[in-house]
Image 1: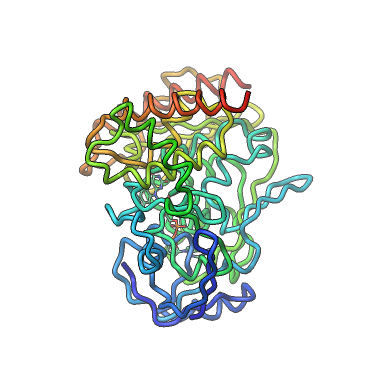
Image 2 (image 1 turned 90 degrees about the vertical axis):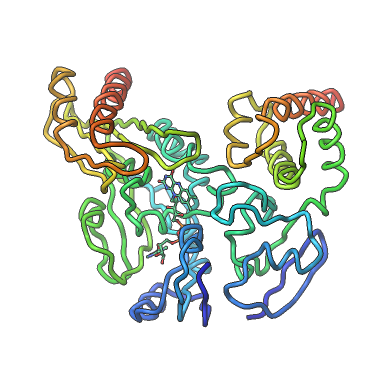
Amino acid sequence: MQITVTINGKKYTEDVAPDLVLLDFLRAHGCYSVKRGCETSNCGLCTVHLNGKPVLSCSVLAVRADGKSVTTLEGLQKEAEEFGGFLADEGGEQCGFCSPGFIMNVLAMVRELENPSEQEIQEYLAGNLCRCTGYQSQLRAIQKYLAWKQEGTK
Amino acid sequence: MFTVQQYVKVSSLEEAYTLNQKKSSAVLGGGCWMKMGKRRIGTLIDLSGLGLDTIEETEDSFILGAMVTLRQMETDARLKTTFGSGFADMVRHIVGVQFRNCATLGGSLYSRFGFSDILTWLLALDCDVELAGAGIIPLAQYAATPYDRDVLARVIVHKTSRKAVYESFRNTETDIPVLTCAASSLNGDLRLVIGGRPMRALTVDGLALTKSMETIVEKAQSLPFGSNMRASAQYRRHLAGVLVKRAVLRLREVE
Ligand SMILES: Cc1cc2nc3c(=O)[nH]c(=O)nc-3n(C[C@H](O)[C@H](O)[C@H](O)COP(=O)(O)OP(=O)(O)OC[C@H]3O[C@@H](n4cnc5c(N)ncnc54)[C@H](O)[C@@H]3O)c2cc1C
């Protein structure tokens, strides 16, 4: 089936198998930040934005992205680098495997929630598993990043 | 992961219904549950072109399309105003935001999982479901029906003066629930719905909200409970008492 999908601002029209998942479509187009983790919709590693909303690309069929716009970490490099700095400063990434999906969801949260409380942050990121950090350093990184962003808008 | 021979984005519910009569066909919701299986699907039926992804409010009801995501129900301000935090409480522990942006109401209700937060909450309200073939039937009737080849189109949540609250318990955050519990009351009559027993949710009607807590808890605990890897029947029975008590106390507060 033929689909047209915009990936990080660039339009692609292609024939795809109806059971191809978005994750594989994106990796085939060079978006290697999108990783296959649990494949049971639990870990959040494969998070991308579909029309601006965070989704699990391991669970969405590529045909469902027809006519839509997909953003991966490759398309948000500036914001990702900014937040990544806070993550590194707080020791919030160790092996780094979960970072792309985690950063994508943090950036989605920043767009969706205004001034999120600690509980809101925890709830928003509950679907991003990290086996290294214990989450406290990530939480600190998010809070400092949010404060820094607020400073910048003053 | 399932495999698909042919994908059809249908242009009407009738088309979906007709295609779905074949045993090898399947309707696609969010695909989150289906992807964990290895089914070989002949025709995959996509409803996403039918405008069933909206929540409409009318004078006497809310009409939720089958393709509405869990996240839409969680964040809809009108549902919150009318039903309190119940719709958000129903889904807030289900995996994560990204998952809830994918999984649908239709896929959840069709599946009628024993552990379903969604089924438990909606049974506590006054709901009908609209099916492409069978038309409009009460949700309670649908919940008790064996799986068939009909297509779920919409859920109609009637506005009444019913008040409702939702409670659930998980062993770990984002896991499926060990027990789910919704309590609602209309004109002083209490309705309890207990799911994750681990069998499908059951409803207890016919108690007054003013009855003693012991009587209410006893009634809830008299339901059948079972054991699985998440908890024993004995633990679930105990938990049912705890969640029902919490729910009824909250309900008495909002009444
Ligand atoms: C990892 C994981 C954790 C979960 N945790 C929870 C939890 O804690 N609590 C909870 O309540 N639920 C939980 N669920 C279930 C989840 O909330 C959804 O109910 C489930 O994913 C099905 O929704 P879907 O849209 O993905 O449906 P799909 O996977 O697309 O479909 C499921 C079934 O429904 C059929 N179907 C879909 N739409 C229709 C329709 N309109 N008409 C007729 N048939 C239809 C499909 O053919 C299929 O048989 C979990 C699921 C997963 C994968």
